[in-house]
Image 1 (tube, rainbow, N blue to C red):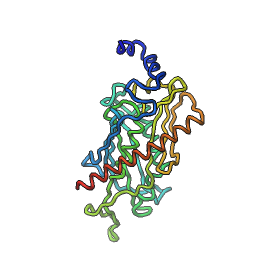
Image 2 (cartoon, one colour):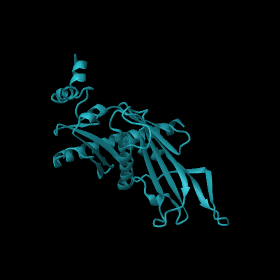
Image 3 (cartoon, one colour):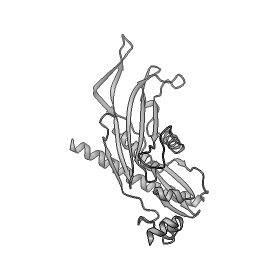
Image 4 (cartoon, one colour):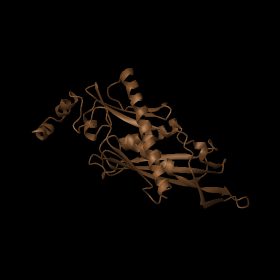
Length: 277
């Protein structure tokens, strides 16, 4: 009976749960799905992580390459994020050039990196005006069930914290770079940004960590990113109904609590790998 009701009247089906302050998957409105993390998932990458938020699965691989700094920023390197939402993760995505959602996600991740100062571009400069690192951060969604933004940010942060780069010097005689693979060091992580996404239903009910189905029925989406100091780093809201200042403040408070949980999870996984080595 319930399955038939869900098929015939999917929106009313969801509303019936919201009236009872719960959701079809059994969660409270402000309850997250189980989040799991694995690091070192890609052996050929300089740093990598795989994150699952419920069924949503994202893998991040970071590859570092040497390049020349830009003329207008001679003391900075580059961080180039790219989010891929291929057809294999959901039937809603198609083959071909990146769609609008993938492009928006890539731009949002780039904004988070810059605004949060998780890594400073200056730290990637090896020799001013001559040599710097470029970090290509590729994020691929393997299974899409909503809330891909949160999963991407967690995967990116975890991958960055495990990335190790070799020592590079400039040969004084040939002026060519020399790479010492035997001596590697980690990136300097200045901040730990974590995102939390919300969906708004009927301009009133606020839910965290929405599934793909919940995203389809919502009237607005919102992703809030904060760091370990509770500083608001970025807000992503692609249209939809507006939120009151009170609702926005509630979102920020929830994000601050979530940030502590995720940072603790990342540190715990990294520590367990170190102890096992």
